[in-house]
Image 1 (cartoon, helix red, strand yellow):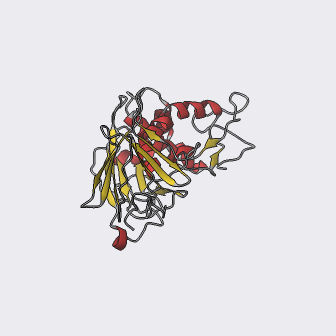
Image 2 (spheres, rainbow, N blue to C red; image 1 turned 90 degrees about the vertical axis):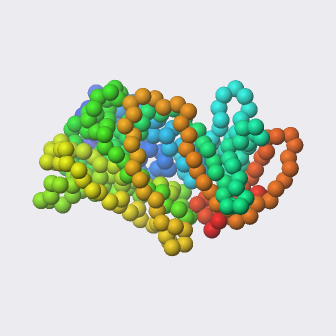
Image 3 (cartoon, rainbow, N blue to C red; image 1 turned 135 degrees about the vertical axis):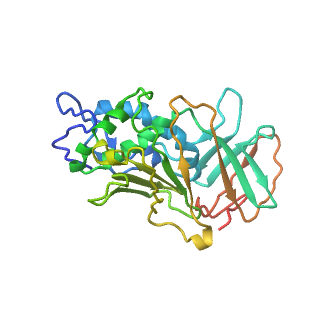
Amino acid sequence: MLGDPARRVCRFCGQKPPAVKFKKVAHAIPEAIGNKSIASAYECDTCNEDFGSGIENDLGNWSKPMRTMSRIRGKNGVPTLKQGGNKPGWRIEHGDKGFEISSYEGDPVYVLDEIAKRVTFTLKRDPYTPVGVLKAFMKIGLTLLPEEEVVSFPHLMTWIKDADHARAFADRFPLIYTFTPGPRPNDVIAATLLRRKPGFTDIPYMYLVLGYGQEAFQVQLPSEQHDAAMNGKPITVPAFPVPGSPDPERYGKPRTGLLELTGRQVVRGDTVTIRVGYERSHHKDFRPWPLRIRPALKAAWRCARSVLMRRRG
């Protein structure tokens, strides 16, 4: 556990018992992205509930499709993806035998390219607020901060707690995203805080680098105290590596880009495209539809057996 359980003070509201309670288990990194072991003594029950129903819910909804396909186990296991609505629709769930995918002929969730040996999924995200996702990543960084660094981020603390996303502060900070192809464990999280060396003022003071599954996220933790000299100046920052990346010569080089999580309105109906390669396929004709598939995808999903397809190694 981070912090002293016998001397609890909430890092986010500044309150301590008996003004606030600390009965709930506060996860330093959200349980939804696989954290089962690192708790925090820095978060009271009130702030925990506010974050859980607010920005951490935004992060969970936004990240859900990739967490499912990477087999990241949250509070209730690997999340199930489904079309939603009152009518029967596509569904993706992970069980003991791998993935089971239900797809209707008139409303497929995937496209099979037998020439390229690739399956392309188009998956729908649950509603989320983009800047809420950004706040959730920054909140993880603030939770992991050493005690002596907390005083450097009072404005950021206030901003992530504000449920009014119209308030500007760190909402224009891009997030550096890296996707690493190849096999990755689904039960390992890598979190690193990087602070600049003394004497430098032309690069950000603090970064959080968070990696799980095949994804890594790098976000600045802005400090008015330490980053004032950078206001209005362009900067160049590399994507910092995450430990344990697969061999790029075999699986391909990591792909890096910027995510602009600046929107302040709820996004509905957003989709994400995920492509998976395979070695061979076996066709079976099922009647009636839906077509049910039990692919046990290896490599990134590390499932060796397959009924219909196996992922390219």
